[in-house]
Length: 132
Image (tube, rainbow, N blue to C red; front, top):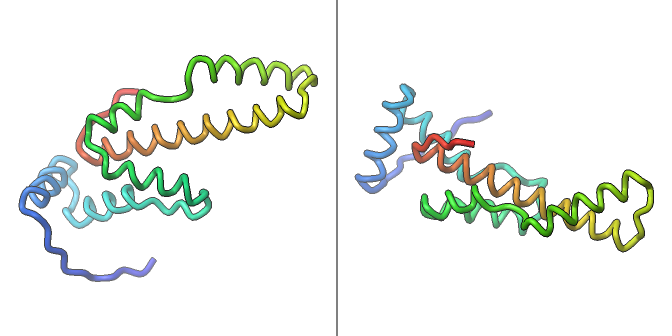
């Protein structure tokens, strides 16, 4: 990995937060800033643009909004429907329409999981200790 050198001007409060985080983690400030940027700008080139944009937008959320994201997932109705479809799949009785529904629910589940994981990572970078 090549390294680039930059000069970065930042608000004093942000600098102080980063400095306190570095001290708490007993890491160099530079490392904390690199890890924070890496978390905020994940290399998700293999993800569809819409999902990449959605995950990147989480970095702009307030702490309270991120906590809400960690609590959200699929609705109880979606989870029940997913379970029913998986049972039908195991029994080998899925129709083409049900297979399409199953695929859509799997995508929704994966997306919710990615959003939760990203929100937890951002909260950890902000100094919180998320309880799972």
